[in-house]
Image (cartoon, rainbow, N blue to C red; front, top):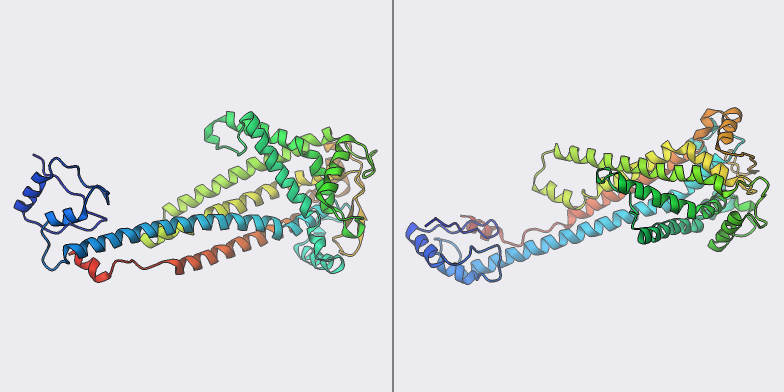
Length: 423
């Protein structure tokens, strides 16, 4: 007969017993399964009655009470950690959304106005000039001028998500970019879905871009989602009175640059996101951490890699594709009678006039008339946008760590009782 070993409960060592007592106990329970951790079918009273009590240890009833309290405290602690981690993840996602939309939207407006400004050079658009332009615009036109077109922008984001979900539901194509290890078939499926979705929402994108760059002083009525949809229909059908249609590019000529920009942005962002998470994981594995640091990593610090990766992958994608974004915006806004704020003095307005026939002619005209650095117009606004976003996300991380430090509770098992059980 093999010498069976009983599993200690919750890491607490069993009381010492003699060989004869242990032999009798094992023989009496030879046909019973080994008790598991807090199994309902196993009685603590029966367990305590079979084993002799160690000298100086508490009574059987008090041991059962302490073990029950210990199990209950561990259960509540695990539940609280899960709730904290879930709440932290939700809050982190909400912070990223608010930082990208509310805090960063004025810089998006300035970036697009810089990109369609053919009267200034890229070297003139410094970060200090961007801050000065923000102050002058909100002083002269009101705070709402910095968030013009925000409603249409959010409508565009919602329509893109809805279109992706509908196409994915009908065709079973993945609406999220899969990992490269899952094979090229799923990646091609995602790229196909993104292409169809971009083409379907392309006229609305043109109308949203116009509402974003149009100056408040030159706007007859405030932009609404209905007016944005009306302009999108005009853009798609080629009829109406909102645009100069002799200069307006047809929709089919905007498909290629828009699809290339959207798909490339997703691919670059996915690669950067995965690389940041892998580097952070390697960095964490090289560190030696105790139980407290491991517990902290499981709650608050586990959210930080996602926050960092989300911010960096958006920044790298936007920065690397800034020339393509400039070309795309100029082609979309050609012939739309756009009147934009002059960011050089932030007090006057200038019309956007262009007559490009295709992407190649746009690139050649930019190089000849404005120079190669003109492809990076709006870079200062982009740097300010992500600097502000990173500062907000980092501030929330510090606050979460501060709150988590005071949310820890001491162990419910008394120290003297726990020490007596370990003897």
